[in-house]
Image (tube, one colour):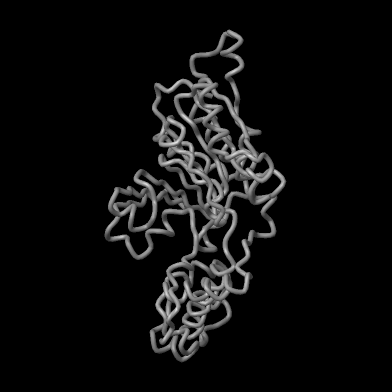
Length: 335
């Protein structure tokens, strides 16, 4: 294809390391552990492969699940989240500051503030000299808002707070952007590298990490939004999978050709290069990266690369914030 525009500048933004390592799995150390329907993906980034995928050196754990809207599934995910988060926290740490990033007035960006409103805060008991059980750690929490509302760089806000409160560890909770539809509201990323507020929506702010605030930072994030270009790209791929499934099942009876658990039935299916070319012509000839970048280029050029969130986001964010807050409480305190 004689396309001469440099597509690299149109790369789709994602905060998730699992989306970033696609195509580089052989160069990056990672493992997968399964707990029923929940999978835990652990990725270790070093200086070399960090440059390759534009991620900081460190450990990234991503918990993947199907649903947290019913109590049984949510409890199962909460147990896995609590166990994985506990591995990041030294048992000897006594003072923790929890930061909830985001905008409480914007539902998909309200995860951080909602988590902070539900965590167990105890620092005032220590300050007042109250008799506190040995299983309870000193925990403070704060939601700094967004720079558009405060006029203050979030990282500077937190640095000042750290100097005053003097925690041994900072936990930062934030909403993220995903590089695929299947990750939205269905994954939790934990990392010891800190976090970049606003990076998922191309609104780069100063990072919050041990390098900027002088205290170890654990970042906890859930992808709640995705770019329109990702939806178009995923739709084309699902189209190919759907056609492949139809071809092999069109002669079967209605009970066999069922839509129940349809995504699981088609997720590993694909068409041949020639079949894709027959269906979409020149577009069908493109590699995954070329196709994604071209779609991103088109929508970005006409200012239609919207940031999109599911219609049930208010309900799901409430459930996710409760899950994360409970997981944090149980990983910090003996309760």
